[in-house]
Amino acid sequence: MNEVLIRGARLYGEGEPVDVLVADGVIAGIGAPGVATVPEGAEVIEAAGQVLLPGFVDLHTHLREPGREDTETIETGSSAAALGGYTAVFAMANTDPVADNAVVVEHVWRRGREIGLVDVHPVGAVTAGLAGERLAELGTMAKSAAGVRMFSDDGHCVADPLIMRRALEYSTALGTVVAQHAEEPRLTVGAQAHEGERASRLGYTGWPSSAEESIVARDCVLARHAGARLHVCHVSTTGTVDVLAWAKGLGVDVSAEVTPHHLLLTDERLATYDPINKVNPPLRTEADAERMRQALADGVVDCVATDHAPHAVQDKDCEWAAARPGMLGLQTALSIVAETMVRPGLLDWRGVARVMSERPAEIAGLPDQGRPLAEGEPANLVLIDPDAEWTVHGAELASLAGNTPYEGMRLPAVVSATLLRGRITAREGKIG
Image (cartoon, rainbow, N blue to C red; front, side):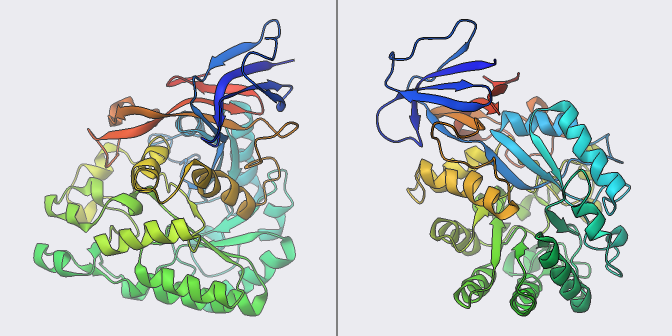
């Protein structure tokens, strides 16, 4: 029986430290420090008052396998996730071949199980080949061994309202959720950066906020009439928050995520013309970032998702117009949330558990993730040193790619250990 004793941890960062005994994949006991006898052969983690939370769940990760193993693999992405405190990730469908059928999603799911560092849940494409023209094999993917729980054409908007309506209706029957990349493509032709004063001054083609907001509004109406569950990927504008608040007020079953980079970074970074800052949706204004932070604290935006998007050097180290959009996020997400939400007092550590573990697990329908820290619950856990700081260096991250926008930044909060069903997957910055 695999046993681990976490000695002197503060559950959710609250109260006095306790000892937590993990055995056979579950939390076997919680008690005052020193009361529990260390089982023979058990691994001991000295927490020294550090914060213990449920393991994080990322609803939006790009692992690139199959097809672009030069930028990331399920193994390297899983390593980055475990080091970032994650115990479950959802791998987006824009691979090559596209994850639009049972064969591909089962490959992703099986590779995740073989590696065993995090639970890898494949996201199935909404439309065949991400082309937006006809529905993919939603039923066969949902009923496959992978048990697909979420469908998304992320990277592309499901722009056709009839296709989106049918996807929502089928998803309702399957008990799954449709996650939309909200971008009206006719409003973003040639767009390179947030439409505003900075883009105009610097010569970027503008990307209007309305491109996101109009799709979110449309899809909320469609979801309401279909009685479906809708999830909005990477929200980024003040107007989108307003639409979400309106829809939730009407009882629409809609959830939404915000990325760490949209909590912290703004279009002020465009002045360097450095493609490391190119992302979809684009970095917005400080007013938008401030609204994202408040909406996350208030629950209008439900959770944090990384949109971890590794790219090869040649796809980022080039002129802006040719560069691929996207940023790494798995190993830095906790620190960005600590910097933008915990330090200013917008969230406490229990709130961090809500937006990075509990709520995403609920949205995805994962019964063994995001569970309370209590005896008998699955031991999917992350131990955090809230007082430690670290400096980000892309070359030192576990991903094959190094395209982090936080290069050289000093950030708060360090993951000391991650446990997946009671087994230590990451500890002190190392795997296993």
